[in-house]
Length: 309
Image (tube, rainbow, N blue to C red; front, top):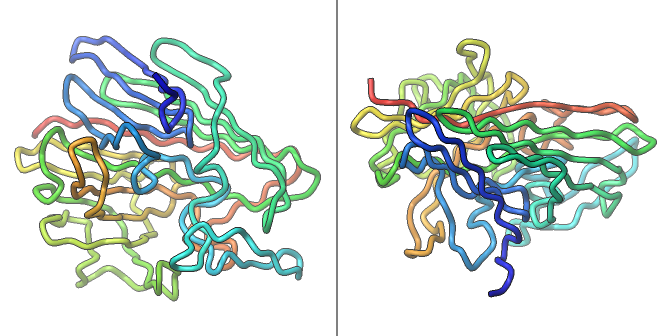
C-alpha cells in the first residue's frame, strides 16, 4: 500500500465518560483531517486519495488568506511571492500548505508537529513553526508557535482552515454565527475597505441559515465571550460546534464551498478560518506581527461539540 497523498496519518484518541474523542492529523500541512466526539464528527473529512480539499484543516503560515498579486514592499524594496492562486493572480495561504511536518512530541492523545519556513521568493526570512494538537473531553485544543530564527525582523500571521460539521447534518441545514461587528469589502478576495455589519446580509451575530448562503467573507471587531472569540455552526436540533480562539485571532473568514471533495463525491461545506491578521496583511498591515530575531508568536484555538440546549 502506498503512502497517502497527505503523508503520515497521526491518529489521536482520548477515552472519557462522554464517549471517546478521536482525531486524525496529517503530515502534509499539519491538517486537522478528522475530529469525532462521542461518535459525532465535528470537522469535515476529505477524500482519501488527494490533497486537502479546499485547503481543509491546513495550517496557514506565515500569512493566512491572500496577498494581492503576491506583491508587497519591505523597507522600500519590492517583494514578489510565488503566485499560488494563479487564476486570481495572488499568493494564498502562506508557505507551508504543501510542506511536510515532522513529529517532535507524541502521546496517545496529543502530538506536536514542526516545520521550517526558509528564505524564498518574496519572503526572505527564516522561521521555525510548531503546531500542537491535544484532545480534550469535548474536542481539541491547538497551539501554534512561530519563532524567528533569522537575523532580521519578520512579518508573521497565523491562520487555519477547518471545515465544521455537526454530525451528518447537511451543511445547508446549518446556521452560522460569528460575533463580528465589522465586515471587509473585497474585490477578488482582496480588502478594499470595511463597513459595519448592521443591517446587512453579513450580520452573522444572531446566526444566519446557510441554506442559500454564498460566503467568502472576512470579518473583524470580534466580540469576546469569557475572554475568547467564539464562532459556531448550529444544527436544527440545537447541537452546535464551536470554534473558540485567543483574542489574538482578531479576524475570521467564513467560506462556503460547493465543490468540497469527499470519498462519496462533492458536497457543500463551510469553513470558519481564524486568523491573526487580515487578508493582504503584508500590504495593509492589519493585525500583522513583526517578530524580532529570537522572538516568538504563540496563539491557540480549539473546536468543541456543544449539546442541544
